[in-house]
Image: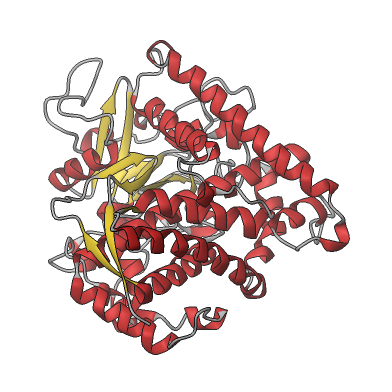
Amino acid sequence: MAQTTQPTGSTEPLPGNLPKGFRGAEAGWPELHRIPHPPRRLPLVGDVIGANVRTPVQDSMAIGRALGPVFRRKAFGKEIVFVWGARLAAELADEARFAKHVGLGVANLRPVAGDGLFTAYNHEPNWQLAHDILAPGFSREAMAGYHPLMLAVAGQLTDRWDGAAAAGRAVDVPGDMTKLTLETIARTGFGHDFGSFERSRPHPFVTAMVGTLTHAQRRNVLPPALAPLLLRRSERRNAADMAYLNRTVDEVVATRRAADASGAPGDLLDRMLDVAHPDTGERLSAENIRRQVITFLVAGHETTSGALSFALHYLAARPEVCARARAEAEQVWGRTEAPAYEQVAKLRYVRRVLDESLRLWPTAPAFAREALHDTVLDGTHPMRRGAWALVLTMLLHRDEEAWGDRPEAFDPDRFTPAAVRARPPHVFKPFGTGARACIGRQFALHEATLVLGLLLRRYDLVPEADFRLRVAERLTLMPEGLRLRLVRRAG
């Protein structure tokens, strides 16, 4: 059984007598001194010179490029080992030796998401229970059932964008992609309409969700002793945000419970409420259902909206890529206004554009792995049971050993079948790895490919002349300030 850490202050006993709270690298890496760290380390505060608390992942990328595929950073008593080399990441993907580690910002989300699928510790029984109950909700048959709702939400987006194109207004790409993906997961998974496209400002659920993610990121980079003092106002705001998320989800669940069961749509919420585990007969508790719904609403739209936003940025910035992707959509779909479910997978080049965007900017930019037993990483670095490392997905996706000598270049043909076969395994991990990889990854990929195909057929995408890509971090990644002008295409 995997052994995992818990956030500071937890009273739940850990299996195997592992220490509670944040486990610094000193506790798990006996020869930590052999792993490089940034120069100019200061007593007490650590590697803080030049650090930017708003962009910790991009800071770590710069440090990793300088120090190599395994390095460490320390701040205010917290020392973390980072890994990004392709060979090392492949080792950490070995489920016989390593498992998901829940720590850092992910653990900071547990007050609201609890033992939901994304934030559950490996030893918590609700993870396996929920996974087994919900996995059929992402089968091919289930996905085909979600497809018409995806089209309907995409239609609301194109209505909005048609108006912007006619008026000559630029569109807020991340904002509109967030509306799109929130509505898609809410309607397909839970039969709920947030009315996002009728609003001039983000839905309060989105505001609260962004608040909790941003707060978790802040707690991630501050010393534990000072965080309550420095984040006093943020803590109050976060408590209000969490209360709003809980209240909203409780209303969604109560509405479904009160509905006529004979007319139930058979979505994820129905599975949570009505389906028992096929072997044990266990059901999800009311509290766990709330946590799963929050998990899906947050994780199910935040990462996909980022993926779509980055893909649209690259399509607008690379006219030759855009023209090739549009030609494929027009050839494969023709004049079909509403492509069928089976037609989406035929957009192979559009999918490569999406994959290449996820390679350069995986919207979940890192994942953590911990040792199931004492082991040695790369035959060099001893790890005790419970020791963990943070895999920097963005640098893994840029490792020249796996991706060639121009890894920063945007090239969708990296994902032709021949190119994929020629690469080492475990070098493309936008959805995490192993048993705890994202359960909804096929949902996200189908939705994003469908939307890109629809938008490419309908609009020319014109970037603003002075736009330069800047990436905002709030546990997930998003292009900051991305706006596009649209020209409605004939036909």
